[in-house]
Image 1 (cartoon, rainbow, N blue to C red):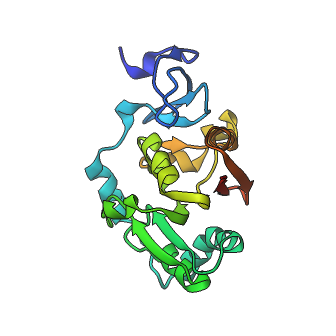
Image 2 (image 1 turned 90 degrees about the vertical axis):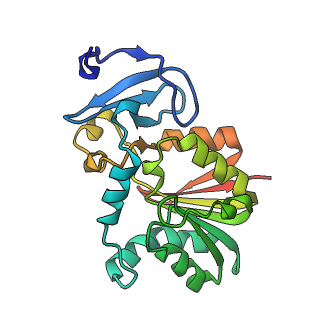
Length: 225
């Protein structure tokens, strides 16, 4: 049976890649992919058989032209850097997770707040030794939507964060099924995990985090003692 022939109201025994709940609902399908939504945490995610492989992803990432001297790119990243700096103590110790080939956000945070920055990216900065440390904060800009198994990365965030530490995330959030239908954000085939406010609230409650919504694509979470 073709994956596109399943009834749209099917309740699937498909495991959520974020919370590992075993029930999901069909959410949407387009010309290329089908999407499920977790019945527990509300994550919307691409069905496993439509996930890109590592070579396809890397080729797409290599096409990105995000340069350190690009003022537009700096303004974009400042949407996360500025609110993070407002809650951080100067000279904090931070990890920029999913920094891409140009770790500009880490550089901006280092210069603006005097923070000591480490970076990790599975394609460009794959040194996993930095994941064995703990940090005052973790920044993650336009990366969480690329995670095939966000349960693993989220656990890394929790393990690497000191009590009282902050997670700053920039990603566009799911608003409704109707808006998802024509949402340009899902058309990037490397975008496979889509978070909503409800998803972040579920994570915050489960993991004892406070949550602050900064804007329609920036969210801050603090690890409570």
